[in-house]
Image 1 (cartoon, rainbow, N blue to C red):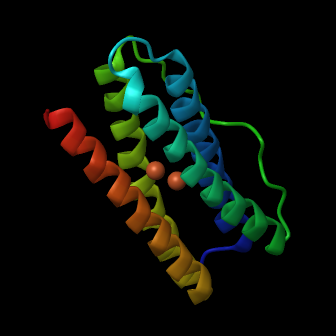
Image 2: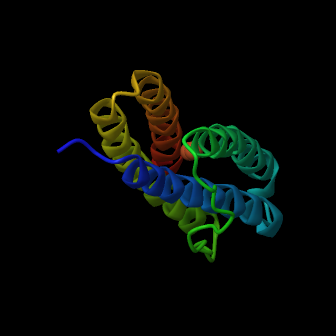
Length: 140
Ligand SMILES: [Fe+2]
Ligand SMILES: [Fe+2]
């Protein structure tokens, strides 16, 4: 049986909650950061938050288009004790986002909304880029 619209909206709302978490997590880190890592990481983290904001806008608008109510409740933010732990938490969150968008793109295809499928695959590509950046940073 094909996926229902309600189930798709539920999935997109999970993704939206995860994007809000990403914004708050990146921003909180950019505020908390002290020491030599503050420059340039504070700016890097706040730019990441701005990028995730575009994902929020896309998902929320799409949920409304489908007749749903976009959530404003984020998934729980993880607070790291130092820069490395912060980036490790971000890496985990990006990895989750990639897995979720992979599943969601499949569901969008199943639902017959190819436009949404393509958009979700683009989000997946952007999160993959975020993940690879974080991997490089953590290698140092
Ligand atoms: Fe995102
Ligand atoms: Fe991301």
